[in-house]
Image: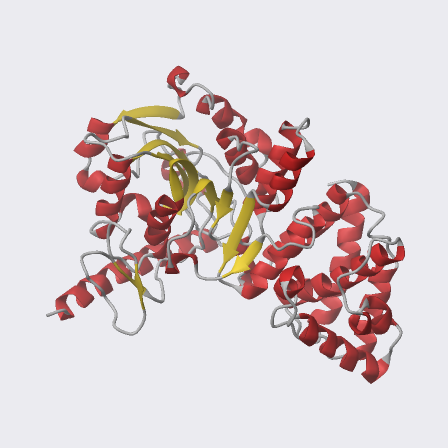
Length: 483
């Protein structure tokens, strides 16, 4: 991030602390910045003759001309009315509310935004500023915003090895603030520079789509993509429950489904089994019934892909070893897809402490008599790796070796190394319950009692293990209750 961009992010973010004294959470502040920034940019576009999608009585001029109580009334009405409109406006202003109750502070925020020429900035600068705000917002652990923000070096490495193509439809069913969608778009734009106008328009308006279940997060994602020049006035993201139904098949899925094991609903599969009576999904295309939403997302991603489709999915450790439905889903995935690569991610890179996650790479295939997975290559980026969010954050350089080992164009040329090992399908089937939680490196921290993880990290890991055990007991209890 350049010094100019960093300074502007700091300037905008400093005001968040002023509003926090009034009880405004960082997530709410980021939302208010989103509303005002969109209105201001629409005003600047109109000033240079580009037209505006904002009705005149709710535009920036109508807002900035007021002060005191009249300003607060106008702002609240503007948010309410713009949320009723279709298209991008409807997504960004959906159920929008004024959370700044002090008119003087609202006026000050408007003046701060008005002091910058946003439309005069390059797209990458505006986008970088907003990404900076989203990163700051993600640091608000208590607000839970971090679960919607995947570390950008991880995203860039995944997109680099997945290599999207300009004719592909690419989707993220749990898009958060749009990290994967944005990285895929930037890869396409930077890699394929000589495309004709029709191909460029396809990439900009049709190739990429995201969904998130949380309206506030969809709003941030839509604004993030808009500031990076994606989609124009056409929304590329929608609010909805991705697990609710099967969607149109796509060529590529890149996603990091939300952390947290238990889903508030229960899937019903073709066997007719269900664990709850109140709310359920009718998904005939799922292999197993489970309330584990990460396992459901793995099944859903498989259902999203064309027979030649490819996926990279961030999953927590429990997806790799959970028994019951977890085992059935892993076996089905290994049989019906080519599950070729597993990246063990390090701890300390997430805004939620103690999270242990991985990236599962697989290619969907047409039905066959023999399993499609022939070998699984596992890259261990976790053992003896120590990262923190502030003092030692993960960087692109830390994933360089993985990208090189991946051998994107010719996986047959892969070679084993200290951190990269090959396991045949027979090896995997010989493991108890098709357990993919595979390690081979000696963990030096286990023998080094003086350099154990921080108490907060250890506590978080213990809580996570206890919660997983409790969920398994609950699943057994539910099965025992069924007639």
